[in-house]
Amino acid sequence: METRCTTSVLADLVRAYARRDPPRTVTIVGNAPLPPCPQRAALVDDSDLVVRMTTFALDAPDGPPRIGRRTDVVLLHRAVVPGPGTFYDHSSRLYLLVEPGRLHWEREDRPDWWPVHPVSVPNHPYTAALKELMGIPVAEAAWPTTGTLAVYLFSEMFPAATVRFTGTTVVERPEQTEFAHGWGPAVAVTAEHRLAAEGALLRRWAEQARIELVA
Image 1 (cartoon, rainbow, N blue to C red):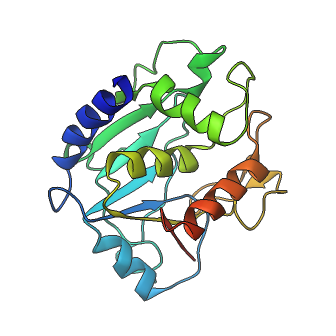
Image 2 (image 1 turned 90 degrees about the vertical axis):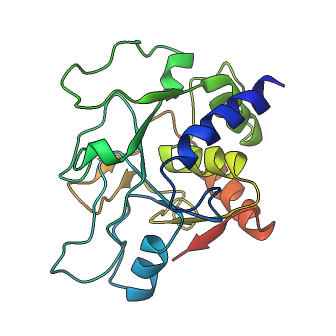
């Protein structure tokens, strides 16, 4: 009951930022650099709800179409290094704060320079549940990447919607030791991530038609 109630409350909040209520298409855009593709960019921008995260890139107005320009919801974590798009036009977006490290050692305080006051995503209904699906003991100091957590969160909130995930390399490259970004330098894959388990879960969800993986 607690998980259903939490999901319902979050979904009510998110729907206020969607193009359609309830959204029938949700596209989650990861931070991996992608080659130009007008079809992909159009798919992103035509979605009822567009979700991006942390240090994300947007297509430049005069640049080639890759990943679109719309952003309705942004997922942050406390260690985010903001890019030009992270807080751009922030008053028109919903900001959610994912806090998997709070299950272990992460402190509660947030950066006081952020121009937004994000809504926290509770850990036990989502992070802990996703860890279980990945085969990670709850007590182990390991957790999913923000992209996979976003996929789980939004597919739980909107199970009838088509949930797409693009801009991820976890499925094809679980052995990687750093994440290249569409904006900014690559970042190290930190010790708490289990990319092989994530990739296998995302692949299984795609096979089950819970999500669509968009190249």
